[in-house]
Image (cartoon, rainbow, N blue to C red; front, side, top):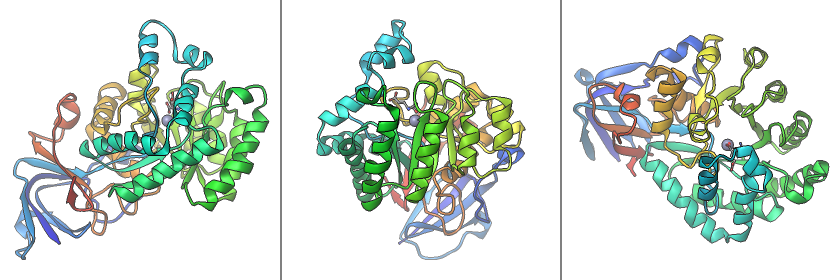
Length: 411
Ligand SMILES: N=CN[C@@H](CCC(=O)O)C(=O)O
Ligand SMILES: [Zn+2]
């Protein structure tokens, strides 16, 4: 099957050579071809260039993209798409003055979602989650990481990971699964953290490895959740089962967690709303990518990740949604890109790099996703006619996407 896109006004994120990520000043550069064509063969990008060199070959389908922008589909490297029910009541409680922390201390928050998840059947969780997955695909996401972490019991965590596996089998979008048993301490382990960590390491992890249910391991490294030492135990145990770390850290407090993640060669450190100079220093010249989640900052009114400071220090930065029922009930990467520009002062070029190639890197997919490169998956967004790609973050409330292709097929 051959599909030819012609007359593309702007073809963005064109990388002749596959790169793994962009860092620091490189993030301001978004290579593009004006008046371009792009050839898709089956599920991969076969060729692209300027219209003057457009091949005159028989194809199965031609898409005329006059006036439109084409760019790689978003790569959302941090989500909790699989959950049961919602937390609308906590949303209203926060409007009425309670904080996220106060709600969590009353048994709400993650423990509220865990209760709902353990009371809901696997089939029902699958049905609720697939609606969200279908929605984010329509919004231009072509690769996504999904975490467990609302089970907090052996059965609950396995149930979540099996749902993620089933979604990966049934949908064309690339899905990476992350085991987040260390998301919160269940009430019965509140006074005995070591015992819950033993359950994670000795009961959950071996079963997850046996069924090959996860690619990565995560923990909520935060004051009141998992300490640096506890998270180190989790990362070490994960590594023994071949699971690389991607860690929630520095959401509310900076407690030297990032240094521990770098020491354990984490692929990514995510949230980073609170970042110290030492945290930035320790990330320099490492393979660990920081991931910012601006719609979480927006939704629960916490600081935004200091992108300017991090990029000025030469660091790479990825953007992701954090789609979850508590702090970010939205998986819309278009909103994330716009909010990064509006609130974090990232340029459109930096934000698009962060949401495509760097997002792909943050879930180990940059060899196949995140740029317009021959041989990569034909995952792309075709916009409505735009004056320029600046409109994507500028017109933040408009749906500017006309078509989404995943593996070369319209979704
Ligand atoms: N911070 C930890 N985990 C999620 C929120 C969990 C929840 O409130 O359900 C996050 O990334 O924001
Ligand atoms: Zn999260």
